[in-house]
Image 1 (tube, rainbow, N blue to C red):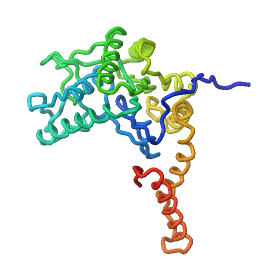
Image 2 (image 1 turned 90 degrees about the horizontal axis):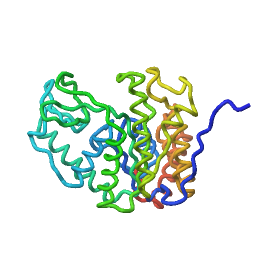
Image 3 (image 1 turned 120 degrees about the horizontal axis):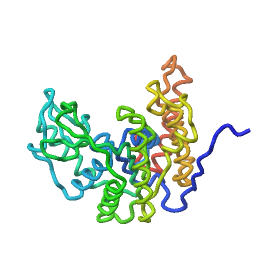
Image 4 (image 1 turned 30 degrees about the vertical axis):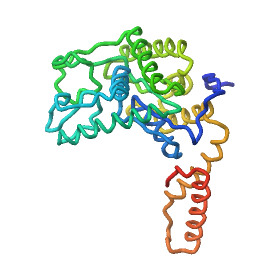
Length: 316
Protein backbone atom coordinates (compact mmCIF):
# COMPACT_ATOMS: atom_id res chain seq x y z
CA UNK A 1 0.00 0.00 0.00
CA UNK A 2 1.08 3.59 -0.62
CA UNK A 3 0.87 5.74 2.50
CA UNK A 4 2.26 8.98 1.05
CA UNK A 5 1.67 11.11 -2.01
CA UNK A 6 4.90 11.97 -3.80
CA UNK A 7 5.41 15.37 -5.40
CA UNK A 8 6.89 14.75 -8.84
CA UNK A 9 9.92 17.01 -9.27
CA UNK A 10 11.88 16.95 -12.51
CA UNK A 11 15.63 17.05 -12.00
CA UNK A 12 17.26 20.12 -13.52
CA UNK A 13 19.62 19.33 -16.38
CA UNK A 14 21.52 22.58 -16.77
CA UNK A 15 23.14 25.17 -14.50
CA UNK A 16 23.28 22.85 -11.52
CA UNK A 17 24.64 23.92 -8.14
CA UNK A 18 28.21 22.84 -7.41
CA UNK A 19 30.91 23.91 -4.97
CA UNK A 20 31.99 26.51 -7.52
CA UNK A 21 28.51 28.08 -7.55
CA UNK A 22 27.78 31.27 -5.68
CA UNK A 23 24.34 31.32 -4.13
CA UNK A 24 22.39 34.24 -2.67
CA UNK A 25 19.34 33.50 -0.51
CA UNK A 26 16.70 36.14 0.19
CA UNK A 27 13.28 35.96 1.77
CA UNK A 28 11.29 34.46 4.59
CA UNK A 29 12.67 32.43 7.48
CA UNK A 30 12.43 29.26 5.42
CA UNK A 31 15.22 30.54 3.16
CA UNK A 32 17.39 30.57 6.28
CA UNK A 33 16.67 26.87 6.85
CA UNK A 34 18.08 26.05 3.41
CA UNK A 35 20.78 28.71 3.78
CA UNK A 36 21.96 27.15 7.04
CA UNK A 37 22.22 23.79 5.31
CA UNK A 38 24.30 25.30 2.51
CA UNK A 39 26.53 26.98 5.09
CA UNK A 40 26.95 23.74 7.06
CA UNK A 41 28.11 21.99 3.90
CA UNK A 42 30.47 24.90 3.13
CA UNK A 43 28.95 26.15 -0.13
CA UNK A 44 29.74 29.69 -1.23
CA UNK A 45 26.60 31.45 -0.02
CA UNK A 46 25.27 34.71 1.36
CA UNK A 47 21.85 34.87 3.00
CA UNK A 48 19.36 37.56 3.96
CA UNK A 49 21.60 40.66 4.12
CA UNK A 50 18.59 42.65 5.43
CA UNK A 51 17.45 39.84 7.71
CA UNK A 52 14.25 37.90 7.09
CA UNK A 53 12.01 39.50 4.45
CA UNK A 54 8.51 38.08 4.34
CA UNK A 55 6.89 39.51 1.22
CA UNK A 56 7.94 40.19 -2.40
CA UNK A 57 7.75 44.00 -2.15
CA UNK A 58 10.41 43.98 0.57
CA UNK A 59 12.67 41.81 -1.59
CA UNK A 60 12.14 44.08 -4.59
CA UNK A 61 13.05 47.12 -2.51
CA UNK A 62 16.30 45.54 -1.28
CA UNK A 63 17.40 44.46 -4.76
CA UNK A 64 16.45 47.79 -6.33
CA UNK A 65 18.28 49.88 -3.73
CA UNK A 66 21.33 47.61 -3.87
CA UNK A 67 21.64 47.70 -7.66
CA UNK A 68 21.01 51.46 -7.83
CA UNK A 69 23.27 52.14 -4.81
CA UNK A 70 20.52 54.10 -3.05
CA UNK A 71 22.12 54.44 0.35
CA UNK A 72 20.23 55.09 3.57
CA UNK A 73 20.45 58.35 5.48
CA UNK A 74 19.12 59.43 8.87
CA UNK A 75 15.67 60.43 7.61
CA UNK A 76 15.12 56.81 6.52
CA UNK A 77 15.28 55.59 10.11
CA UNK A 78 12.71 55.51 12.91
CA UNK A 79 13.29 55.51 16.68
CA UNK A 80 11.11 53.23 18.80
CA UNK A 81 11.58 51.41 22.12
CA UNK A 82 15.01 53.00 22.63
CA UNK A 83 16.40 51.59 19.37
CA UNK A 84 16.85 52.83 15.82
CA UNK A 85 15.12 50.83 13.10
CA UNK A 86 14.81 50.73 9.34
CA UNK A 87 11.35 49.84 8.09
CA UNK A 88 12.96 48.13 5.05
CA UNK A 89 14.92 45.66 7.19
CA UNK A 90 14.40 43.05 9.88
CA UNK A 91 14.80 43.99 13.54
CA UNK A 92 17.99 41.90 13.67
CA UNK A 93 19.73 44.91 12.07
CA UNK A 94 18.28 47.46 14.52
CA UNK A 95 20.74 49.21 16.82
CA UNK A 96 20.93 51.57 19.79
CA UNK A 97 23.14 53.89 17.73
CA UNK A 98 21.78 55.31 14.47
CA UNK A 99 25.21 55.57 12.86
CA UNK A 100 25.83 51.89 13.53
CA UNK A 101 22.52 51.04 11.87
CA UNK A 102 23.29 53.22 8.84
CA UNK A 103 26.71 51.63 8.47
CA UNK A 104 25.23 48.13 8.66
CA UNK A 105 22.43 48.92 6.21
CA UNK A 106 24.69 50.48 3.59
CA UNK A 107 27.31 47.74 3.96
CA UNK A 108 24.53 45.21 3.40
CA UNK A 109 23.48 47.05 0.24
CA UNK A 110 27.02 46.95 -1.11
CA UNK A 111 27.43 43.26 -0.28
CA UNK A 112 24.07 42.48 -1.87
CA UNK A 113 25.03 44.25 -5.09
CA UNK A 114 28.33 42.36 -5.23
CA UNK A 115 26.57 39.05 -4.73
CA UNK A 116 23.87 39.87 -7.28
CA UNK A 117 26.56 40.67 -9.85
CA UNK A 118 28.39 37.38 -9.27
CA UNK A 119 25.71 34.91 -8.18
CA UNK A 120 25.13 31.78 -10.21
CA UNK A 121 21.94 31.03 -8.28
CA UNK A 122 19.54 33.26 -6.34
CA UNK A 123 17.00 31.50 -4.12
CA UNK A 124 13.97 33.60 -3.15
CA UNK A 125 11.51 32.31 -0.58
CA UNK A 126 8.20 34.17 -0.49
CA UNK A 127 6.30 34.02 2.79
CA UNK A 128 3.16 36.12 2.51
CA UNK A 129 1.10 38.40 0.27
CA UNK A 130 -0.02 40.50 3.24
CA UNK A 131 1.80 43.81 3.60
CA UNK A 132 1.74 46.74 6.01
CA UNK A 133 1.83 50.34 4.80
CA UNK A 134 3.30 53.00 7.10
CA UNK A 135 0.77 55.83 7.13
CA UNK A 136 3.31 58.60 7.79
CA UNK A 137 5.03 58.13 4.41
CA UNK A 138 2.53 55.86 2.60
CA UNK A 139 5.23 53.22 1.99
CA UNK A 140 5.02 49.43 2.30
CA UNK A 141 7.38 48.22 5.02
CA UNK A 142 9.35 45.02 5.51
CA UNK A 143 8.96 45.03 9.29
CA UNK A 144 6.83 47.04 11.73
CA UNK A 145 9.36 46.82 14.62
CA UNK A 146 6.54 46.77 17.21
CA UNK A 147 5.47 50.30 16.29
CA UNK A 148 1.77 50.72 17.26
CA UNK A 149 -0.47 49.05 14.69
CA UNK A 150 -2.63 52.17 14.32
CA UNK A 151 0.25 53.72 12.37
CA UNK A 152 -0.14 51.11 9.61
CA UNK A 153 -2.75 49.89 7.18
CA UNK A 154 -2.84 46.24 6.14
CA UNK A 155 -3.43 45.06 2.58
CA UNK A 156 -3.35 41.86 0.56
CA UNK A 157 -1.28 42.16 -2.61
CA UNK A 158 -3.15 41.00 -5.70
CA UNK A 159 -1.78 38.33 -8.03
CA UNK A 160 -1.12 41.01 -10.66
CA UNK A 161 0.75 43.20 -8.15
CA UNK A 162 2.95 40.30 -7.06
CA UNK A 163 3.55 39.20 -10.65
CA UNK A 164 4.62 42.73 -11.58
CA UNK A 165 6.92 42.84 -8.54
CA UNK A 166 8.56 39.51 -9.37
CA UNK A 167 9.08 40.50 -12.99
CA UNK A 168 10.67 43.74 -11.82
CA UNK A 169 12.99 41.68 -9.61
CA UNK A 170 14.05 39.39 -12.47
CA UNK A 171 14.58 42.37 -14.79
CA UNK A 172 16.71 44.18 -12.20
CA UNK A 173 18.88 41.11 -11.65
CA UNK A 174 19.21 40.53 -15.39
CA UNK A 175 20.41 44.13 -15.84
CA UNK A 176 23.63 43.30 -13.96
CA UNK A 177 23.81 39.49 -14.21
CA UNK A 178 22.22 37.76 -17.18
CA UNK A 179 23.49 34.30 -16.18
CA UNK A 180 21.95 34.12 -12.72
CA UNK A 181 19.39 31.36 -12.17
CA UNK A 182 16.55 32.54 -9.96
CA UNK A 183 14.86 29.79 -7.94
CA UNK A 184 11.54 30.86 -6.46
CA UNK A 185 9.92 28.91 -3.65
CA UNK A 186 6.93 29.57 -1.41
CA UNK A 187 7.47 29.09 2.30
CA UNK A 188 5.44 26.30 3.92
CA UNK A 189 5.41 28.31 7.17
CA UNK A 190 1.80 29.29 7.87
CA UNK A 191 1.13 32.92 8.86
CA UNK A 192 -1.83 32.13 11.10
CA UNK A 193 -1.82 35.53 12.79
CA UNK A 194 -3.37 36.74 9.56
CA UNK A 195 -6.08 34.07 9.89
CA UNK A 196 -6.45 30.57 8.46
CA UNK A 197 -8.43 31.59 5.37
CA UNK A 198 -6.33 34.71 4.93
CA UNK A 199 -3.13 32.64 5.01
CA UNK A 200 -4.45 30.34 2.28
CA UNK A 201 -5.44 33.30 0.12
CA UNK A 202 -1.99 34.75 0.64
CA UNK A 203 -0.17 31.56 -0.39
CA UNK A 204 -2.46 31.13 -3.41
CA UNK A 205 -1.59 34.62 -4.64
CA UNK A 206 2.13 33.92 -4.25
CA UNK A 207 1.97 30.59 -6.06
CA UNK A 208 -0.05 32.03 -8.95
CA UNK A 209 2.29 34.99 -9.35
CA UNK A 210 5.44 32.85 -9.20
CA UNK A 211 4.19 30.56 -11.94
CA UNK A 212 3.24 33.51 -14.13
CA UNK A 213 6.80 34.79 -13.69
CA UNK A 214 8.54 31.45 -14.21
CA UNK A 215 6.54 30.76 -17.37
CA UNK A 216 7.72 34.02 -18.92
CA UNK A 217 11.40 33.99 -17.89
CA UNK A 218 13.86 31.27 -18.95
CA UNK A 219 16.21 31.99 -16.04
CA UNK A 220 13.48 31.61 -13.41
CA UNK A 221 12.52 28.31 -11.80
CA UNK A 222 10.11 27.02 -9.18
CA UNK A 223 10.95 24.60 -6.37
CA UNK A 224 7.85 23.26 -4.56
CA UNK A 225 8.82 23.59 -0.87
CA UNK A 226 5.22 24.52 0.00
CA UNK A 227 3.72 21.53 -1.81
CA UNK A 228 6.25 19.08 -0.32
CA UNK A 229 5.21 19.98 3.22
CA UNK A 230 1.48 20.45 2.62
CA UNK A 231 0.84 17.59 0.18
CA UNK A 232 3.67 15.11 0.68
CA UNK A 233 4.27 15.24 4.44
CA UNK A 234 0.75 16.24 5.55
CA UNK A 235 1.25 15.47 9.24
CA UNK A 236 1.78 17.56 12.37
CA UNK A 237 4.71 15.35 13.38
CA UNK A 238 6.65 17.30 10.75
CA UNK A 239 6.03 20.59 12.55
CA UNK A 240 7.55 22.24 15.60
CA UNK A 241 5.53 22.57 18.79
CA UNK A 242 3.94 25.78 17.50
CA UNK A 243 2.31 23.69 14.73
CA UNK A 244 3.35 26.40 12.27
CA UNK A 245 7.04 25.99 11.44
CA UNK A 246 8.36 22.79 9.81
CA UNK A 247 10.68 20.84 12.13
CA UNK A 248 14.10 19.36 11.37
CA UNK A 249 12.61 16.21 9.84
CA UNK A 250 10.66 18.29 7.35
CA UNK A 251 13.61 20.58 6.62
CA UNK A 252 15.89 17.58 6.03
CA UNK A 253 13.30 16.04 3.73
CA UNK A 254 13.05 19.22 1.66
CA UNK A 255 16.84 19.55 1.64
CA UNK A 256 17.15 16.03 0.22
CA UNK A 257 14.59 16.85 -2.47
CA UNK A 258 16.42 20.08 -3.29
CA UNK A 259 19.82 18.42 -3.58
CA UNK A 260 18.36 15.67 -5.78
CA UNK A 261 16.86 18.31 -8.06
CA UNK A 262 19.52 21.00 -8.19
CA UNK A 263 22.93 19.61 -7.18
CA UNK A 264 25.51 18.34 -9.65
CA UNK A 265 26.70 14.75 -9.27
CA UNK A 266 30.23 15.77 -8.33
CA UNK A 267 28.97 17.56 -5.20
CA UNK A 268 27.64 14.38 -3.56
CA UNK A 269 30.96 12.85 -2.42
CA UNK A 270 32.10 16.28 -1.21
CA UNK A 271 28.88 16.63 0.80
CA UNK A 272 29.59 13.31 2.54
CA UNK A 273 33.19 14.28 3.29
CA UNK A 274 32.18 17.64 4.75
CA UNK A 275 29.46 16.07 6.88
CA UNK A 276 32.03 13.62 8.28
CA UNK A 277 34.42 16.47 9.06
CA UNK A 278 31.71 18.65 10.62
CA UNK A 279 30.56 15.83 12.86
CA UNK A 280 34.17 15.17 13.80
CA UNK A 281 34.65 18.82 14.77
CA UNK A 282 31.49 18.67 16.91
CA UNK A 283 32.58 15.44 18.63
CA UNK A 284 33.34 15.77 22.35
CA UNK A 285 35.60 12.98 23.71
CA UNK A 286 35.54 11.46 27.18
CA UNK A 287 39.32 11.77 27.38
CA UNK A 288 40.97 14.44 25.23
CA UNK A 289 44.46 13.22 26.12
CA UNK A 290 43.87 9.62 25.09
CA UNK A 291 45.92 8.08 22.29
CA UNK A 292 42.74 7.12 20.49
CA UNK A 293 41.45 10.70 20.46
CA UNK A 294 44.81 12.11 19.32
CA UNK A 295 44.77 9.68 16.40
CA UNK A 296 41.20 10.76 15.65
CA UNK A 297 42.29 14.42 15.56
CA UNK A 298 45.20 13.68 13.21
CA UNK A 299 42.88 11.83 10.81
CA UNK A 300 40.42 14.72 10.99
CA UNK A 301 43.13 17.26 10.14
CA UNK A 302 44.24 15.08 7.23
CA UNK A 303 40.69 14.97 5.85
CA UNK A 304 40.41 18.75 6.16
CA UNK A 305 43.75 19.29 4.42
CA UNK A 306 42.85 16.96 1.55
CA UNK A 307 39.52 18.70 1.01
CA UNK A 308 40.79 22.28 1.25
CA UNK A 309 43.59 21.47 -1.18
CA UNK A 310 40.94 20.71 -3.81
CA UNK A 311 38.58 23.49 -2.72
CA UNK A 312 40.73 26.23 -1.10
CA UNK A 313 37.78 28.55 -0.42
CA UNK A 314 36.40 26.11 2.17
CA UNK A 315 37.29 27.07 5.72
CA UNK A 316 36.62 25.08 8.90
